[in-house]
Length: 277
Length: 97
Image (cartoon, rainbow over all chains, first blue to last red; front, side, top):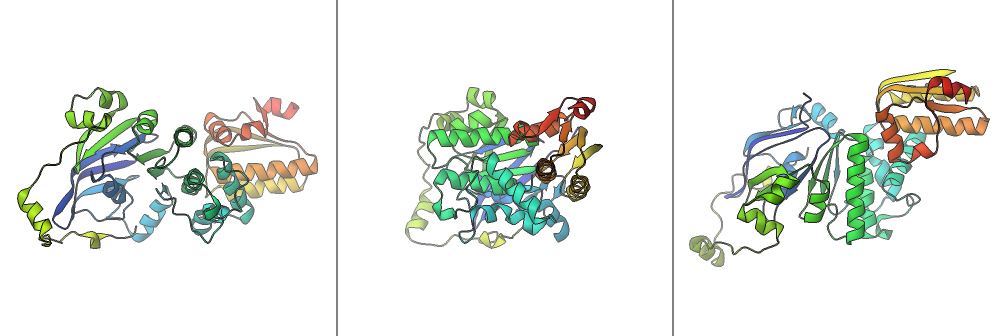
């Protein structure tokens, strides 16, 4: 049996005294499209940042492509990094570089290829994301959907084994969003990469997912196939699927403390734990 | 001439593949590339094939991809390069083409 692409075991993390992720465990298999879903504040972005090695967990382990990301040497971490691609929600393109330069950047930084090969690979990726001929434009000249596609092209330029996409279809019209979904499916089928997608777009999740992890208040509420998630009789999952709002429970003490501007008590594991991979 | 590529053609191996193909193309050789044993080919490997093919076209020599393995074909199809390269079902067919 092949090695899992991602193994997370009993991951816990805090922001101040807030318990953000609570005993999260999951695996992502090779060639799998794995969706992380949840409402705002459910912890999905924090989980993504952990998978990218940007945060240090309070407890628990994260293995990426067989390596414990917090136990490997800097050199091993660098090697691991070249096998991962990330398409950020905002695109995170360098505004001072052309689209082509943005996409070629990882190859120039991490591979020893001649410029002709880098140029061909860059233009190949632009073809794949349907941005052929746009290499000389600047990011400011692109539409929202084009920025998402350019970010995806940069994320896959090194042909990663593991691709992360943060809200790939957020803010896009349904047709463009659907084309991004199709692209994700084609990338998986052609390259066999594992793809982790963080989204709250239900249509997109159901279209592309092999499995869906539903996070709620930092806990894994469900982790199952699309059909199983759809059939779930869990009220919170059905609320999420049917876009029903939930009345937040009121903790009178915490509420009064917030109104009085009192600080939270512990900052042991605050955002200062942030660390670049 | 038949060039056989096997195993994984990735960032580490593709520069050597490129060098070999380009040397043949400089000599204006007709080349059939046997891809039947390719388990994985990344974009840098594909780029080497593109560059060699382009040079073959300039030199009026033949450059045929033969017996393309399924993993290699999926990558070619992703970028629609299966519509660009000269492809042959078998090496023998590639030599006759």
